[in-house]
Length: 161
Ligand code: HEM
Image (cartoon, rainbow, N blue to C red; front, side, top):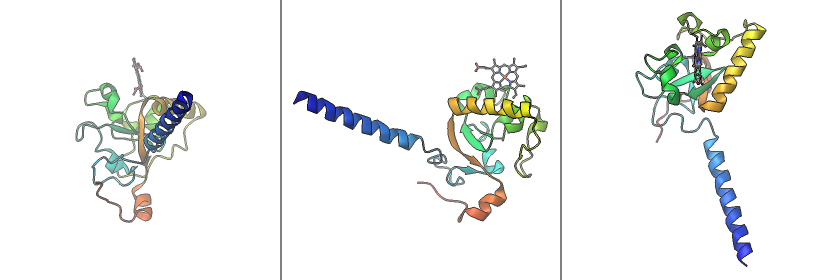
């Protein structure tokens, strides 16, 4: 009898953990957290730049089309940090080239960097950085060209509750 109760408790505990995991692992949920300008965790460069640690305490950064919440790494990316140039930006080319020079950043009014012209070594460097970010930070969304979002989302702005 006691063993049956223990088994039932174990199953309930397992199912509860499974449900929590499923909820937490949905990267496109809750990324706006009350921000009315974010739709389903889809960012344009101009939306992303708001999360540079100055205008908003949260710091987001894009790597290969994915947006990570790097607020926990504020010592690196926050104002005055060594990699502050990456805050609120697509850092892909900088990570590939091992450079935080402003020239590796795509201007906000230009199309996203396709990264097509990277060398094999640069691609490898970027991939290993990507792994670092996947393992360390929370994925909060994806990065898109403005034209892409205009074409696919209707409406493009939504109040989150
Ligand atoms: C002067 C040469 C550099 C030194 C001494 C240096 C030093 C460091 C150190 C000590 C860490 C922390 C490692 C850890 O504990 O996890 C770090 C992390 C990092 N470095 Fe550098 N670094 C240098 C150049 C660069 C360059 C050129 C880039 C450009 C891509 C870069 C990008 C990063 C990034 C993205 C992190 C990870 C931060 C995180 O975990 O969020 N570093 N660096």
